[in-house]
Image 1 (cartoon, one colour):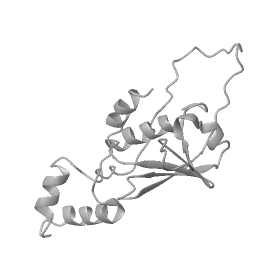
Image 2 (cartoon, helix red, strand yellow):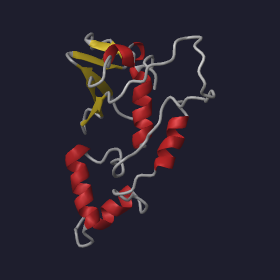
Image 3 (cartoon, helix red, strand yellow):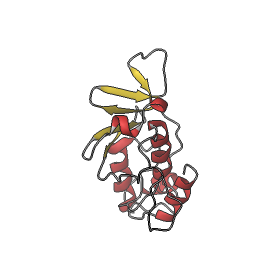
Length: 167
């Protein structure tokens, strides 16, 4: 991502990275400010499409919260770990030009929780039921989550394919 990437684009990237369907409300929180899709009934909510990463996350260590599904209440903390300084406009380098990827998932641990699983407590219950074949909800939860859902598996190629639509 570049410093000019909007929070709206970051939201789309997070949805794709998690494999979610963007079917719930969300907002970003940085310091005392909130960003999201404009809402005439919420005058304090700033337009995420007009907020750039440079403005909201200006330096290494800066962070914000991304809250998705205000009912299930998934809270994600996003922290700037590294900022690359672009070469000055017109500068010549010895490196061959490459098409820069603007959004990329480099690694992951465990699968993303399925959408609508009930937030962190519901996901914990889902994992418990899936792990125990004698659990009274095992069969129902396995059917709901899908036979191919493996909470330990991250498929970076699938995430990258989804993110490529944004880049």
